[in-house]
Length: 375
Ligand SMILES: [Ca+2]
Ligand SMILES: [Ca+2]
Ligand SMILES: [Ca+2]
Ligand SMILES: [Ca+2]
Image 1 (cartoon, rainbow, N blue to C red):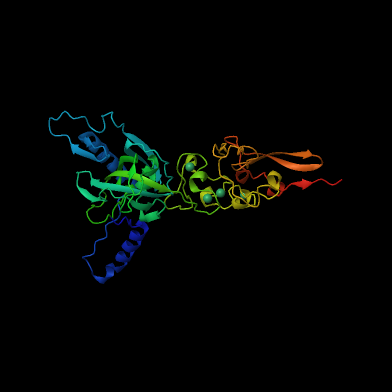
Image 2 (cartoon, rainbow, N blue to C red):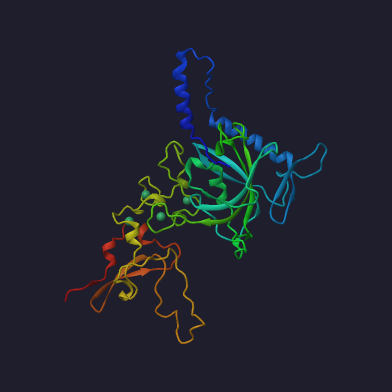
């Protein structure tokens, strides 16, 4: 399916051009204004809740294909709304200055990592209208989507895919294809404002809420500002989402709880090359100085974001890999110490929640170098 979603500003521009032509006696042209977003959100929410109360889960296969059917008159099936096998969940989504309540079902959580809303994913899908009509399906074949694709991907996907985890890749098949097992699978019930709104592709009437059954096979992490820290690690408040609130059309008045902006300059960390605004780039601040750790581990290696434990390798019984192992994790500056007349910085590489140097504007990068005291 072509996931192109027309940006509504473009539509307004087109509508304005059409309006300007009114003097041409072209009475056949009728300009239909866009519906009010908040009123449509309310109508869609009511339609989706009605759908959830009038339909039931007929079947979920071992491959997490779900069949949803309407409860027949007099039927005793338990609605999606009332059933407890796959508890109905919801997420508040702030978009176009409206907070939508978006419902979703998790059929299988998945065993891999969850994408953030700016990562790339490999997923399959089936799209339904509320009347059950299938308007598109990838037939269980994974396709690659960039969740950061702006207007080229519906916002509902960006908001709900992070609620699922990727699967496990099986050995490559003889024909070169890869299958996945234990992937995340579920259903999202999207209001039209987080889907195609007034201008869907063929088969989707204007202002249609959509039901997507999805499977998340794999994810790819991205680093939008190229500072060496992946987007999901720049999700400072840890809610699984990052947002570029410089887009004032989409985000006129965002809740503070959604903002990941360490220095408060209006540029979110995942787009800010100097997260703490101290004049030193993040890339520089997470680069290991050659003089650090006795000068043994330079030059300029990249610190992993979080520490990991170096294990003793049983294959090399005469070497203890845990000895003299390189410190891992982006450190926080603790204090200076003078040892034998040499001033050295003391860093904390491991404590969870430590204030890492690229997020600490009071940490002056020039301190990173070891200074020899004058005699
Ligand atoms: Ca980054
Ligand atoms: Ca966040
Ligand atoms: Ca910033
Ligand atoms: Ca900085």
